[in-house]
Amino acid sequence: MSNLYTIAIALLLAVLCVNSEPLNLAYRAAVQLESGVTIISSSSQGKKGLTFVKEAHLVDFGIDLVGCRNWSDPNGMDCNAYSGDTLCTERRPVLCTKVDNSPRPAYIILGQGAAMPASFYAGWNRGHIATTVPVQGSQFANRAAVDAYCAQSFGTGWNVAQFHDGMFISGMNGTTYSGASWTNNAKNQQSGGWHYYSYGDVRNDIRFWVHIRDQPSTCWAQ
Ligand SMILES: *[C@@H]1O[C@H](CO)[C@@H](O)[C@H](O)[C@H]1NC(C)=O
Ligand SMILES: *[C@@H]1O[C@H](CO)[C@@H](O)[C@H](O)[C@H]1NC(C)=O
Image (cartoon, rainbow, N blue to C red; front, side, top):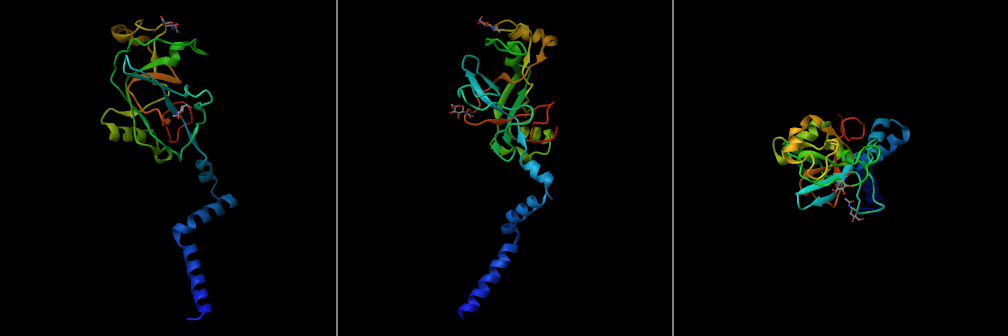
């Protein structure tokens, strides 16, 4: 076989490879991006979802504080409840919850509050939390699909955790509105936000996807 013939075969193979589907995808995506044809898919590529992080675990009550901000890192990231904070193509666990109307344990409400009273930021989710294995937020079409994934991971009654899951009663603190007095005053419970307590002891090494009902900051549709 002559050298020229070998080179010709090699070139032909190279052309066939470039045209074969898997190798060609990145190239085609680049071309489409450049030509502006894939505007929708390029914007969904930059889409971010809302995440929470474990902020504390209170051994005395067996409860976690989860929320926006990693307090153990002074320069750590905050969540973005309005437009998301983590690329949906990233893998994160889903934070799942099972609400069983557990009465509020007598944890102390810390801090001064901000726009809202301190208890707004330290609500009780009336149940338990757990994290799934890390998955791309973009793999879920809508909230129902995330709920189904939680149920598949942990069993019936488990759903995706939400930004507003923490319930508070004005004036609750320590034993005030804990236990039976929490349950007896159910009509005074309101939805809080940003952080909340739950039974659980989830991982603290990675942030996790959560749902929010009133903002477009989830990787999935409402
Ligand atoms: C809750 O009670 C503790 C101890 O009694 C107190 O230090 C704290 O300031 C109280 N929290 C609020 C928000 O009043
Ligand atoms: C929280 O901050 C600490 C201290 O910087 C860091 O080691 C840890 O990885 C952070 N956790 C997450 C989930 O980012």
